[in-house]
Image 1 (spheres, rainbow, N blue to C red):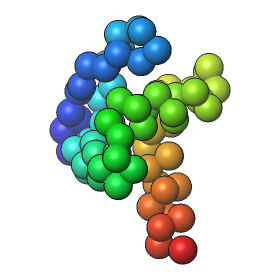
Image 2 (cartoon, rainbow, N blue to C red):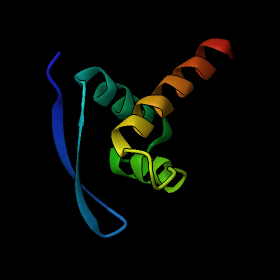
Image 3 (cartoon, rainbow, N blue to C red):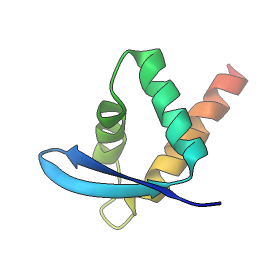
Length: 73
């Protein structure tokens, strides 16, 4: 499955993240449900990320946790 790379500005720093299209779609849906931008959602997730952890991995886990909460709730 090919990764989709997107450039973002997080906390005034330019970065890029490569994720599977399905994860981007879930991040977009998350942002839509919350009335926010995808970048805003990613910034929130990034603030809790341990420095040693890759942003892409953190985003995948956050999406999975959010989907699990929605299915459990």
